[in-house]
Image 1 (tube, rainbow, N blue to C red):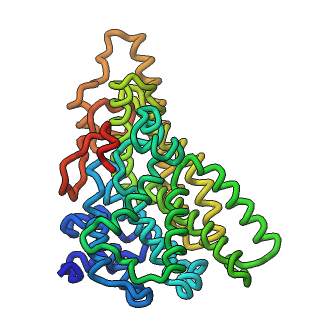
Image 2 (cartoon, rainbow, N blue to C red; image 1 turned 180 degrees about the horizontal axis):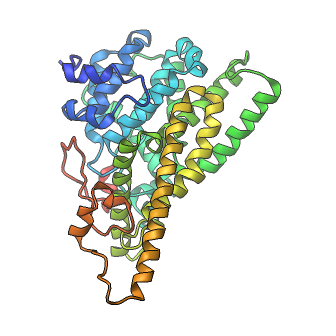
Image 3 (cartoon, rainbow, N blue to C red; image 1 turned 90 degrees about the horizontal axis):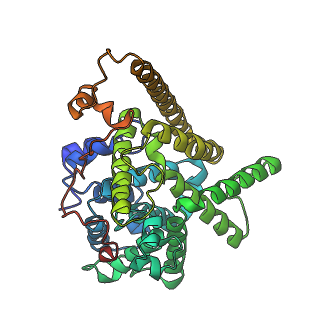
Length: 400
């Protein structure tokens, strides 16, 4: 019975409403290969969404298990990342800002959970740029526009029809079905990082307008205006949740860092094989991981979360951890600078023994060796919940 959880799973689920007490990696170890499905079912049951939305429990369970099985065994954009984003989504939906919306419209809470769970469905481990440069089948199908995001959401909805007894939306009336699709499509498409700057500008404009008018979020009387603002705020919520790995406690954050860097470097290897330009941070021989992480988190993630805190004050816990992680990366960059300065000085003293650069030497530096200086070894990280053969990322069309 998939609905019955082990004591170990239940112990972790007791912490699944918190930001800094829940460890998705340890939860995955006890979830028997289905961290996403089990977490999703827990959240849905916690808010009685299946009964409130009149949805078949069997069909819903069939769907979420098939969805999780459809995630590929790639280093970062896998079922565990989807579960992590789902956790962040749930935390933010429980904030005061969204409480009334979710209570009045449980279908929108379900749409947000669905979007989080499906937002990287069948991700090949390479990005939109690679798909377009390779002129892959999905790039052609979606005209080089938010290629992966369009594929993720289309395949998630297709699974409702093609999966074995998976169509849990069958019981919805036409208007609810259209509303569900509208919100899910919008949320998933807005996880495209190409839209990040526009989203931040729009969010800043809305925050400023709210402060000037001293009005509350989601206080419109007009139904159309209310749904439009709800759609925008849920778009922003999922975008923030998708970047939440940078705001996790340090040891969890570093695990995600190793995963994302491994996936970047795999793509860089493929780009070199196919004669394509190797993108920033994707050359394993020259990538400066601490500097890259410092830049991404300082320039992109922190400004977003500082604004998001104005919408969801409860996000302050994530912002504080992000600032702590930024301090960590700053210290790594400074340590790197000192090491390089020391190396430069040693060149002028040829008698001095050179610094060990072998792989064994790197291992002796401890677990941080992967993310300090210019590590040249392969990460070797795989999905801890591996159930499927790895599908080579170059076969993008085969993943549809």
